[in-house]
Image (cartoon, rainbow, N blue to C red):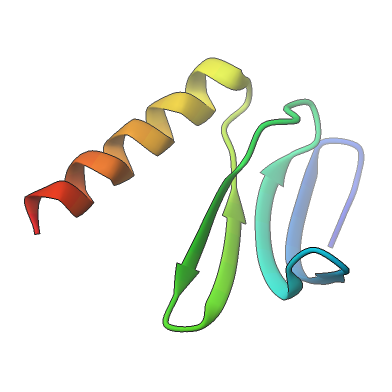
Amino acid sequence: MGNLKYGMGNFRNDIYGDYIRYTHASCHSYVVMDIGGKILVVNGADNSETKKIYDTLREKCQMN
């Protein structure tokens, strides 16, 4: 699914191949994760929110 505000669902491109995407169209920074061989691409509404997602995930990974 894609519209002017969000891109969500299963996508394919030359960089990631098949991947799942939950993104805001207004923000061009992303967090890309490989989870068990599947690629997930997410972002926040803006660069600041995307950085918060990245920092939270990084912190959680370092705890393990």
